Image (cartoon, rainbow, N blue to C red; front, top):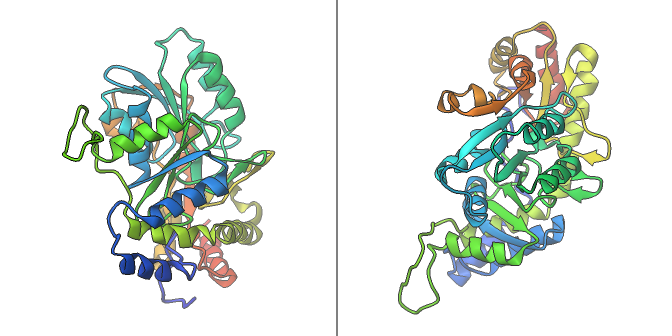
Length: 367
């Protein structure tokens, strides 16, 4: 890659067949939120992840919103959520008039702490209706243990696997442990449809209900009859065609993301700390993330910008956001420390080893 060409954090990377599939959609004239490629895209995700049912929608956030609606989450209900995440993971809690309760991370995986989750649930606090767990930066949370805790306490589990498509925990895909799982195909994800999401579940009735809500809650009449309100959340056939092509190269993208991480680790060595991969898991390494020891993250971010390379701080925890200043939280400072010390490094699958080396040289000069 040219030294003058901007290197993005995680840029789209087409596989080759996407344009052919788009041409077929245009030839059929089914460019609306129905059509052959929507069905094909849903089936490709089912086949890849092992989920029993899938629904292609307009975004990962829409998928979370539908999951909460189907599960009956409403006004005044408490919903637990990872505090160390992107706001799209939790905005839908507000859409439903529910109350977010933020749970902190564990040091081992940076993901939600099972210990803190369990402590909160046995503390005698108001019983929540659900937990939204994020698999951060493509790395698996301790999802088996977390799912067991949720079952024990009788709360629904929604897996936000927006960043972790392709990641597995003891051979099982993230997104398939919970009552619902969601994936995102936003432009910066490991594969993309430019914008889009997928809701998966083993419960057919729930997916059918989500589909009903996602298409304006139209009753089965020739005229437009509505007993409930719904949303315009379905994915277009055009975007689904891109998704079908992207799914064909997903394993290649996972392999390349993991290789990029190994390049970074090889060049930077022990001068920085890295996000752990839990025993029994395979992360997709969507973004390579590091913790700095004695350097401010913005010093590194500004230095990389000088060579036209994008980087960013780690997620600012939700309990630190002005929007959630009054929200309940059960935290121990872990995510705050991660935010204070962490940097997301450029991890586009179009990068080569020489790009990573150039980035690491610049980082090394500023540590």
